[in-house]
Length: 563
DNA sequence: AGTTTCGGCGCC
DNA sequence: AAAGGGCGCCGAAACT
Image 1 (tube, protein in one colour):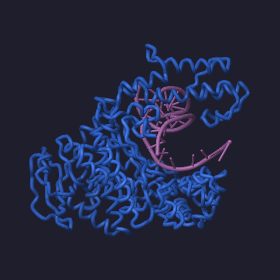
Image 2 (cartoon, rainbow, N blue to C red):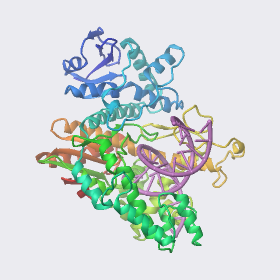
Image 3 (cartoon, rainbow, N blue to C red):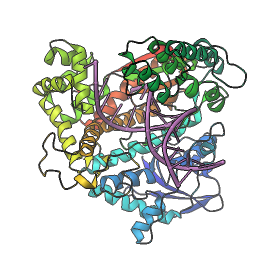
Image 4 (cartoon, rainbow, N blue to C red):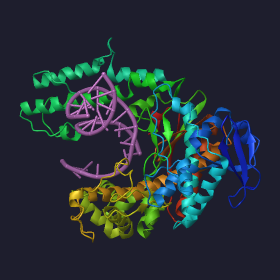
């Protein structure tokens, strides 16, 4: 029998606990108990814990080996509800929600702390807030009503549950860490960069490449200074606007080759070199702090260490413990499959109903078998390509898959006009014009006051302001990327449940890719669990559609061997 | 001297 | 060939 229980961390150490009825209201007395972990452990019948913040409570439970089935994260819910109600950017703390409910002054959210390299203080000293259980219950009841008042209550409730599950998974990943062999990492660095010189300067290979660049220009040039490089090319009679790689590659000059090589290695050196290793790897684990729901689209971010940008060459250092394996699973063409599911385009759903390469199938139908063209067209539709061949390819795509393209076009138009745009489960893209504070923090382009009045009421291609068009691209991508994130959360939740019965641990998640660390004998079970979780997540998120969500999985000892 | 922005590139 | 979405991170440059 599923049971819900609310829990609040009390002043002076203990917790307040109250069982909840099916209606979400207290079904018994509020109990005060001295120990958080003991309170949870002594209630194995509880399948969902309602609490203020998973980031506050889950680490404390994990530290004592207590696992919960599910939770309801009140502050995550508040963020989702505010966004859904078009109030993006209002404070989302439980205290703020309570103040809005009671009509008092609304406290601002506490500032975000960033992770300290090495110390990882925010992981082990989560912020503690004491709000009486009676207050939490009042906010919870109101949040339930707000879910009910939404246009699609069952979807929004699922989203809140999925986000809460994501918070649990993130807390568990933060504790587990990604297996990391510092010795292998050092070998990779030495192979790529050469010896380090005393004094902390550039390693040998970078110094050599800098010399080659200077020699090619006939004077001392610092390849890590874009301004210096642009000037040097200018003096050599080569016009170049920036030093971006794709721009340099088209140039005919002897400095180009060593320059590009320098920039590639320089990047490794500064972002994932010896000092990174020193800062972020402890006791054989890399612990980026995963933040579920860290972006407006619902994608996760990591706080510190660039956890979601591990360069391919550095993945050599991610090695399973002895006798264990890494199950590396990557969703195949996730975004077009999601587009098929949310648009219900019959043609695209049929294509996405097969496990075989989706881009190949699209190209067979609309691009005479030219897979590259098909992929460009699909990505152009999802990302908002505005020029070049992409536009021509988009027209071909529109003819064959009209509903799919119309879906993202509608989202783009809504974004340009400043209307709300939602993912399938109801995560909401912040509007730009006339929005509450917060949209700028989200990086959304604002309209210039100057052209605010110039925008036509009817959406006409080419007549929107530059910023409005940028918002259109943002909204276009939001519905696909965000709905994919909805699905991925449910995938994680299902996979977490299976792993609970095994030694297997989720250790990494990157948008459409997941890594499970498990004993060798569990690997095949995990592979099957990922496949099952993907299909279950597809059904739960999008309802009944023919769309499949296949994964490419690899059972490896080293992450670099997965692809 | 300390803080913010920019350029460039890593990942999806 | 050139370009569209989401991020984080670094050093340098540009500020206060």
